Every structure is written in structure tokens, then in C-alpha cells.
Length: 284
Image 1 (cartoon, helix red, strand yellow):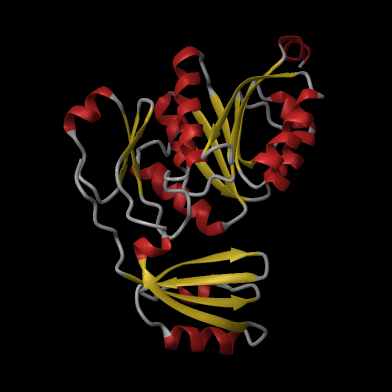
Image 2 (cartoon, rainbow, N blue to C red):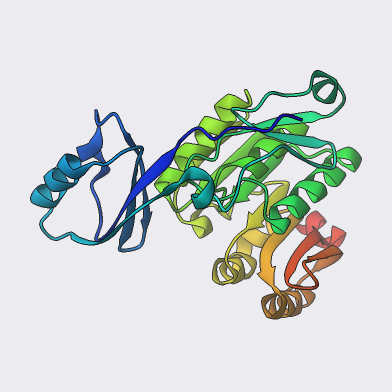
């Protein structure tokens, strides 16, 4: 496997308080995107952007510039992004060369995370990939709902493994756009679409598989929603030890079976693979 080079050199990041109107940056050549998190916004550029920032602050005087940063792309991502394997999946950064023999015998995933987190290096992401791989080798899964999709890596994996309909949802617009790019990169855009929105607004549809590698607070809302029991299988991840105990307690009160619990980093991170009870399935 080759040693990949990142798509960007230094990132110039502007941290603001307030809701940024992103369309002000259309046509700005070095603008990468806006990570909007509630009332906090992080604007990413490939070079200094004082003029664009000045235009923004004059156009939206309610915004406050809190800080500015400059760092390397690999530093932002927490290290160099390199190819890795998870079950049958071989994940390569979009800019890295692939191994032809690997591509023939395994499922190749190309990934360009941009400035969005979720490049597959986190242990919960790898566990989700392993569970997706295992499920698709033993069962027919026609549809999947990927909540908190981030870069879209898990939704793309489900589509590449044979899922004919994948809906990937993220509350962050930049994440939804990044996921869309990765679906196109992997040529699954006819099977997988990404949307920006609240997770609970998409839970009622009866997808075969729910994939949720998300914050604990969102996870509890999903499990408590009526639509949770409309999913035949669920992969629930991103949980710390104490959070996992609470989620397990919630699951034990529902007509579902915990098929597997994966634990990483000496018990820190937990992932549940859950199957709906067969009697519950017949009642739907």
C-alpha cells in the first residue's frame, strides 16, 4: 500500500459565533466549507482569506470573530490518512494509489474526508464496518438508514456491499455535502443519497438496517422513537463505557436482541449489533 499525500497543505480556519450565510463565499477559490455547529461556525480556506472574512463581517454584523487558526491538514485530521482494512473492505484515501490485487478480491472504498471527521481511523468506525461486512455476508439487506453519516463512509460501505437504497443523514450541511461527494467517488450515487436534517425526522420509514455512530444524546432519542422497532437490524456505536451501560438497559426493555457487543481500547468504546425480535417483525 502506498503512503498517501493529503489533498491540502495548510488550512486557514476562522472560528465565529453566529449563523454564517455560506452563499457569500460562492466564487471564492480557496474556500473549502463551513462547519456550522449550533451557533458556532468554522470556516475553512486553503490560504489566508482576510478580504472574504471582512466581506462576511460587514454583510452579517451580528457575527463575532472569536479566533483564527492555521494548521496542516494532517494535524486537523489527527494524523496522516492511510489505507486500512476492515473485513472485506479496503479503504483508501481518494488521493492514494490502490493495489489492483486487493481491488479484485475485496470491496474497495475510496474516501475523501475533506475537513469532516470520520476517515475510518476511529475504532467505532472500524467496528461498524466489520459488522456491516458480517451482516451483508449472511443476510439480504435492501435498505439502510445511516444517521450522523459524517463523511458517508458507512453508508458507502453498505451500498458497496449490496444495499440498493441508502439514506445518509447529518445535521451538518458540510458533512452531508462531503458524504455526497464520497458516494459519487464510489459510484454508488444511484443507491445512496445524503440529506441535511434532524435524525429523528427520518426514523419512521421501515429501513432494514439502522447505522448510527453518533453522540449518546442523539442515540437515546433514536431508540425511544417508535421508528426504531421498524428496523430489522441496528448498529449502534460511538458509546463510551457508562453510556453503553445505559443504552444496554434501554435495549433490554425493548423487543430486540443484542446479537453482539464490540468493545475497543480497553473497554472505552462500545458498539452494539441489535436484531428486532421476530414476533415484533410479524406485527409490523
